[in-house]
Image 1 (cartoon, rainbow, N blue to C red):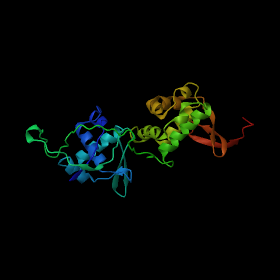
Image 2: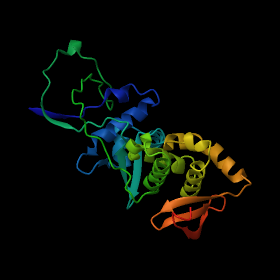
Image 3: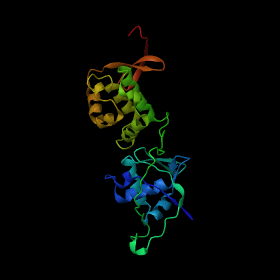
Length: 259
């Protein structure tokens, strides 16, 4: 006889920033993850029964914690939730056709309460584990703003390490700026343009992680700048003026010779 197993990375068991029930919720989402679709989509009622909760609001609380801590991204389409397990979590697909474990005398088996997952130590020898990639498409604000920062850095320093950055990881920090910090895409874009034209901050803001960490300071300095400076920036139509205080471009075009 054969049984199905879900292999869970030891990093989840050892995560110090997760509550016990958040870990268990994440394990069930890994169990339900669809390898072909790239996301997990169990209903709240299914998770409630799995976790032995009296109400689904406790499931919602766990999922919210996992999202805020960077383990999940949720997408709702036609009132159905899709849960994407982010890169920081090692998502090992379900393993099928494993021979049934040989029975052990009951005297040597530790009893496990009903409705709880038995913690069986496993050794994962597969280093090339499949992970969810390309979660943020090129049409999203997260990807567009990450790419903007990357291009501005490279435009100033062609040998910058930003050439080899992982844009998907950069998108996670932009996502947190919008979703958790409640910053608008327009404010983020203005701050990116401003800081990359500032003689001090341009050499300090070299990733979206650092951008989010310093965003409050950057924003306050930007709006308090009384010089009303106008900067040049590149787009598909050439080089344009950008007034970061007004948050809009002048529409005036420049050619490279005039600059």
